[in-house]
Length: 119
Image (tube, rainbow, N blue to C red; front, side, top):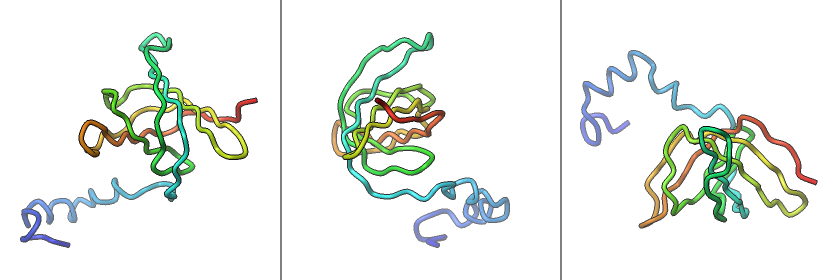
């Protein structure tokens, strides 16, 4: 869709022929769901480097998209505390994407490595 107008038609043909588009299909359906999230950036040693509060934009069984004014690099490890109305969920996640946002904030996509409820 958009080949020749939005995208170079040769590149589009390469992606279609090699089925590269299949890589971008979501494994888990996501839902728009805004909840408060505490984000703790973990260093290479696993220790906490810095912490901030933000809001999730959407969530799925496999991960979370959240706002961040803090610089976060792809492949960074984060600990997430998600504040649902009925319970708190803790997760260890890896940053998969850093997307443009609104001004200083970026959209950070992270996939869960582990998650469970918090007492």
